[in-house]
Image 1: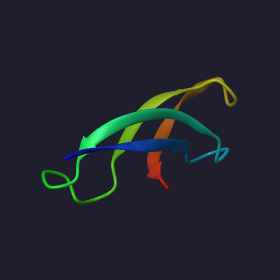
Image 2: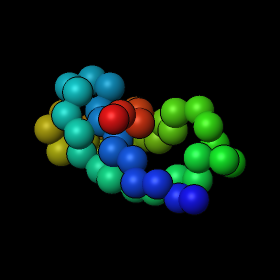
Image 3: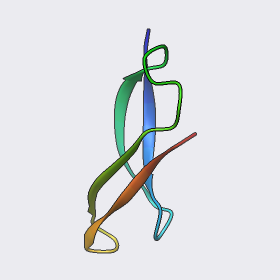
Image 4: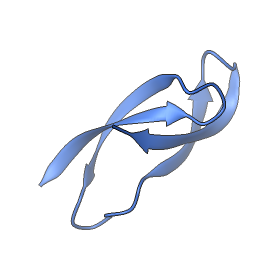
Length: 49
């Protein structure tokens, strides 16, 4: 039931990371604070299509 999702930076809109999540357990969009190599800082990354 796990699906592959892409995480994109909320500052520069670059898609930096891929991960998996269980759609039944977490139906809302995933948000994590991760390092963006384009912004060169830690920023919030949100699930994108």
